[in-house]
Length: 114
Image (cartoon, rainbow, N blue to C red; front, side, top):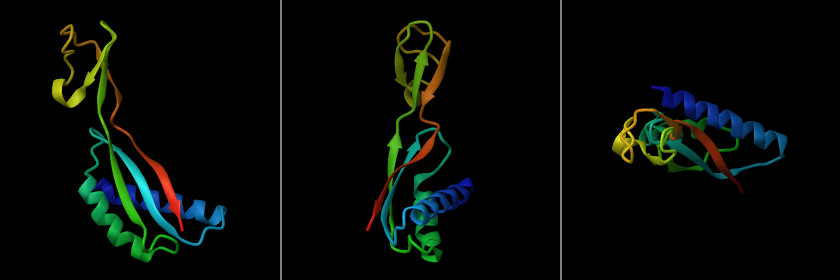
């Protein structure tokens, strides 16, 4: 369950930012999660709701989760396509010379201070 580690990392980073910027309370954190990152959004939310109760600045902070679509680029025809629908084979030219360009990452997009 790397979701717990992910939540702890996000909380640590946000708390550092609070300290550095003299913030007293966070209202929400928006986290973007890639479709093929291996992170399960519902687990993230569950762990978040449990973990923030033990923090200094995030005790009532809401976690907002946004999906990052997985996109693959075909190096033969130079078109992109949705990875989950077509996997490794380009739907335009049927090439397998493809690679993932987005969708396996996660990032903190926004922090709302109160």
